[in-house]
Amino acid sequence: MKRIIMTSIFGLALAVVLGFGFIPATEQTASCADCDTENLPDIQKAFNAFAAECAKLVADGKEEPKKCFIPNTYNKLLPIMKVFAKDNRFGPGDRILFPGETQVGNLIAGANRTFQAGAPSAKDTMTIEITKTDGKNGALIKVCAVDDKGNVTRPAANIKFEENEANGTKSVVATGIQGKIIRIQIASFGGVAKNFKYSLKTSQ
Image (tube, rainbow, N blue to C red; front, side, top):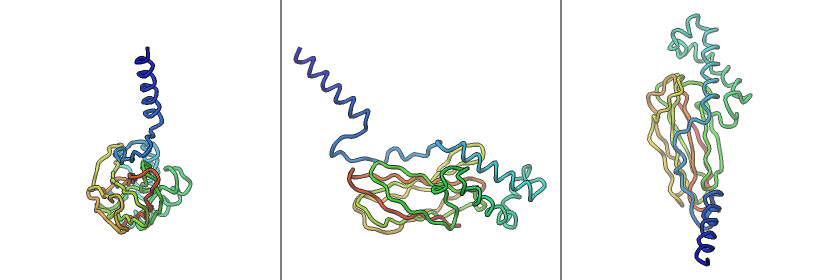
């Protein structure tokens, strides 16, 4: 009987640990930072809005989407897409990151945050730059690209900051991204009472 009771108590404790995802003094990892598809419907809205606005400027823009990325056309579309992004129609506005803009954040261990471009890329490459500004935790940064069919690819290598690594800047270049929307996922790992502060910038 005593053995049965002890087994039940152990099983209950294990269920609580698994259910709540918390083990005291155990460090979190960044294993859940793989490219996800949680925001694909909103990303598709961005593609649809871009195509619709392009069609207003280029008569056959929908039939020949490459014409939407000609500089004279794209430069007219970009301000419109920025206005659309501000009203959260493509996802949370504070998670939209257009080239040349910077976002800052602070993550505790085990937390993920995803930023995405508010329009498909006109160019085939993009530089992603992340600066660690404070904190003792590490972070894993993954770059993903989504096309207008919803296919997700990895156009760049990971960036990683180890635990207790000195503040500094690291960058990577994403390639083969013309016509795709870039998503950048940041996952912090390390001690549960520590954090990772950063600034994120993309440029083309």
